Length: 310
Image 1 (tube, one colour):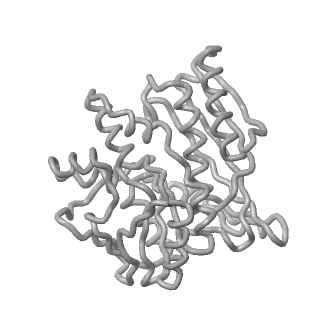
Image 2: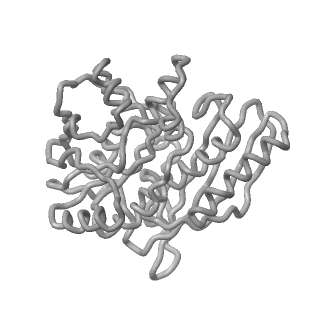
Image 3: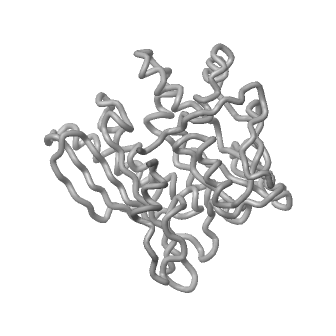
């Protein structure tokens, strides 16, 4: 049983009339008044599963909050507040000071406030953060709104973090650039907010481009084709792909925390204006169609196994 089957079977309960969108997207959407909706999401990071045991407290704190902010970005939301549940094998004042300083720095950068939480002792370090933001009513970006003919885009580059993780697993030393992409992904909150009037559908790429794009296709009842050669890659990853033909690193590696979104033809000029105004890097990688499947155009057509929570 995978993560999504588990949730659907045991935890997909009926919602109250205040819940506009519940389980199944990057965030829940809750009506709070006539003009705005709350969006909320929670993620857990566990030592030796989501980060190596020798990761610094500063990097752990940054990533723990950043991955949650990325969920808000995927909904086009503004961050408001968060809670923190922290499990530690033991207390260490130096570790806690570095963790808290890094957490506060990122929170201040995006204007999100820590309002509560819990601490407990456990065998491994575990961090659970629940983030809450707001979005104008009916303006939330959803996975379920892609339309046939939409162009598919991704922000920045894909595969950087997965390349760093692969090197770590092989006892190789990643470059400073890719290890920072792994430990300190940049939440695309501003881009998400700007896309609310441009994109039809959106998701953040956390478990791998192929799997996360497929979530959009499934929820929207559409298909898509993507061109592997159009996926934006840094030179290190390009070199790796050229040597190994291992496109699964890019398609299924995960930990990108970039946005994958679809844009109708009528809004392409708005997207170009956004790119020019804010020096935003987005790349078209494919198009939505009515095939109900994801087709990969290029010299690689093997199935990839993205990250599975169970």
